[in-house]
Image (tube, rainbow, N blue to C red; front, side):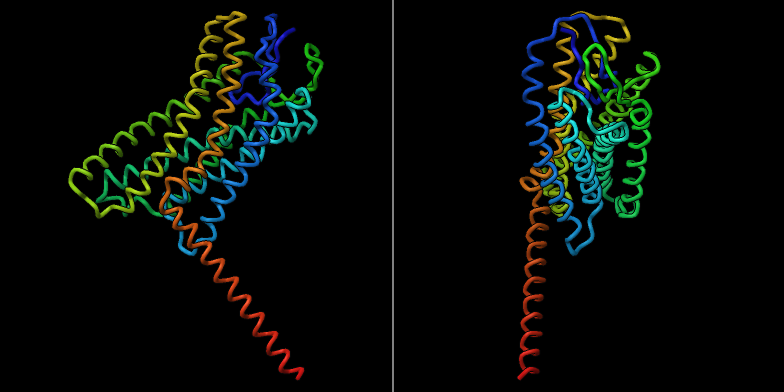
Length: 345
């Protein structure tokens, strides 16, 4: 039996690549587990990220620059997990795409935008922490909420731009080899496919991870220096930085394996190196690491609660605000009822 690559592949590879290799037994296990896993991630991710966004939106104080970036990261994660149920149905349906051509494009653009936007929001938040802790004298001028909002808008636009190939080349077509109507990337030529794959690696991984790594090293060094000097005037900044470092670490652990496998696959394709065992191993690793990357969208809200002391404080204040509003509304209703009874009397 020939092999069909799972269409949730984010690499940009043609998702209906076929070979004359025997079908690996591991694929049966993956296909059995995928729908339930995807749906679980979707439910947990939607609940967690909606909760984070509500806290940031309902809190009476305006968001700080770091919180603006983290709230946009939560929005990107929410976009991803909102698209995943379509793929759960697709996998459960034997990779027959039942939602039409438009949703085939839109759902995959949403997934691709998360891959790009998430890492660039982390670039912005890394640079923000770098400026706040390493260049403390100038951070007041550079770290303005208006600049942060503009930066987020540019990231969303950049993510949409890099998702253009997905919008153009995703198609729903009959695949005779597997007897399914699949939603897959149908590039006009292998050369164009290679160009877009290299673009994903360079702009979706190499450049942003280099910036994040540099900023993170400088941030850690600055925190060490402040600890040695017993420098406590920036205590709030350091608490925010610890949350950011946790989010960065989680992102790298979840996404680096996916990007490394993608890079290896592209290099082997460019060098025209193939083989049944190699092909099966790469495709299975790609699937496992893709779903590890998706799990990051569930992990971030958990980190906000566990590591983010300021976030937990905001949560308590929001609940207090809602409780006060409820009491005020209840008191107003009782007052109106009392006034009405007096009038009737």
